[in-house]
Image (cartoon, rainbow, N blue to C red; front, side, top):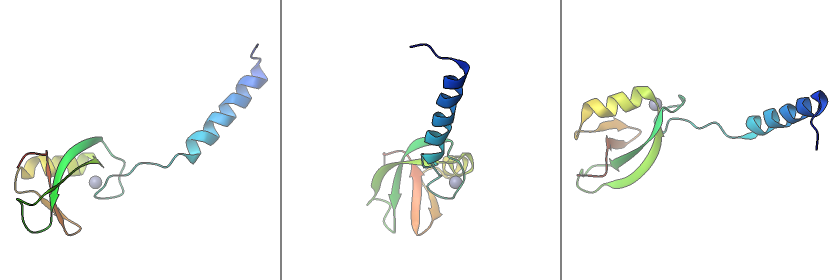
Length: 86
Ligand SMILES: [Zn+2]
């Protein structure tokens, strides 16, 4: 199959449509664009009773979590800290 200019243009059009349909990922703690996926521990009251999960997180929140260390950062009723260790 040979691609002429027109079929290329058609292909680009289709690709743009596909990209527009894909849900934009967001930071788990706000609506910013996420920087990376991180493994975190999350708890409500008891830091020894944690839930371990991976979330997408923005640069700002990544820094905030990094700084807070094991104390964690409180956000939307949960405490978050980086890593699965206790
Ligand atoms: Zn964020």
